[in-house]
Image (tube, rainbow, N blue to C red; front, side, top):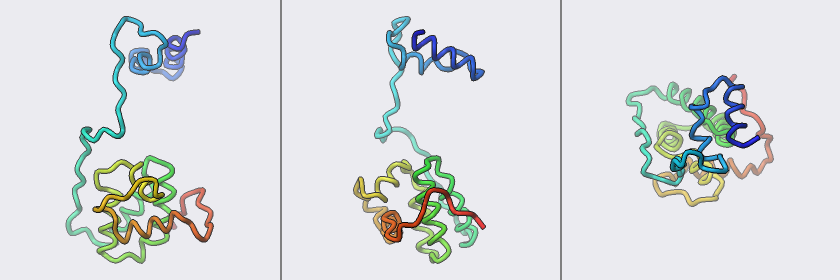
Length: 158
């Protein structure tokens, strides 16, 4: 069974139309059927892609901001950051003052890729000057996990 036919078979099983997976067909098919040019894949390093600008919440009470950040730390869309940031927030967010809370808010909500945050925190990539602050230093120390804490699941909310 060809890869193209297998992909269409999977589409029918999942209730999708073959047309809805055309991009996957073109990129995965061993031969370019129909002589159409393949659809280009998105390059994650391409900085020309528009990322929505984060709108800072004005006059947000500190406790409400911390609650929002706790939720946003858990729901990253990327398991690695979900684990790192949720355990970091559970450990440090309550003791942060207003300035530190604002820095943390900017770190996790400014227009960056979640992989960038992960790479900066783990030291794979150098941290840009605008994010190299006391919160990033705390996060990097948290990532080192000197106490060898288990971090295989997110902490309970209550």
